[in-house]
Image 1 (cartoon, rainbow, N blue to C red):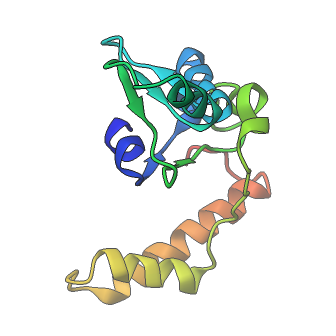
Image 2 (spheres, one colour; image 1 turned 180 degrees about the horizontal axis):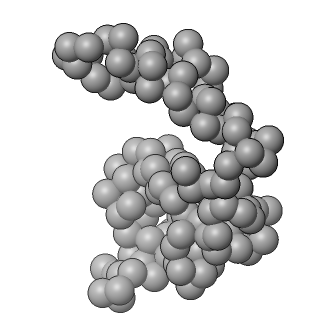
Length: 149
């Protein structure tokens, strides 16, 4: 996170709905206020907070400027059953642009599996695996089986 913020890279945080709520609130402060206090006392500072401090002169040594190209992608499961995560969306959903994604269709999921496992010898297995998970998801959505399956 610190390196990405400092150098203007993208930081991807996965499973944010599993993080303690204290962590979620700290992430929200970085996004909304442009400030995050690190455990060692240093501060990530960006946006208006950084601009105001720069107007006052040189930055203190404890300040790490957030690069203007820095992006934070936060991945989280939807709220509720079966994920049982924290209240990520309730706590800071307003600070992020939310994009809901459905599961891919079987052909897309097979292509994805083939891409991440290009040397897997039994290519037909990957297609069967994608079809099996599509069927399991369908059964769970229809109430025939319960998640996790």
